[in-house]
Length: 71
Image 1 (cartoon, rainbow, N blue to C red):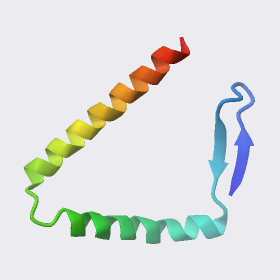
Image 2: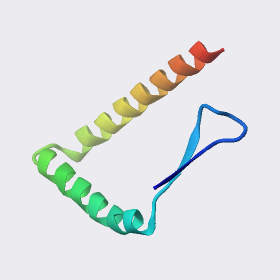
Image 3: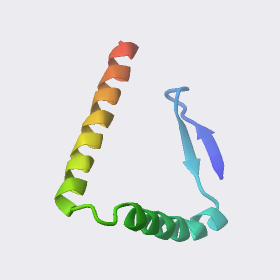
C-alpha cells in the first residue's frame, strides 16, 4: 500500500494497493457477499431495499453535518 498526501489539501490522502493487495480484493468481495447472504437469510428483498435507503440517508445526514462544521 502506498499513501500519498494530497498536495492541494493536507487533510486528505491518496491510497493505492500494491499488486498483492489488489490480488486479494476479489477474495474480500466474495467473503463480504457470502456474509451478507448468511445474515440476510429470511429477510425479504423489499426490506433489504428499505435498509439500503435508510443507511444511505444516515450517510448523507452525517456527511452534511460534518461539512457544515467545516464552514
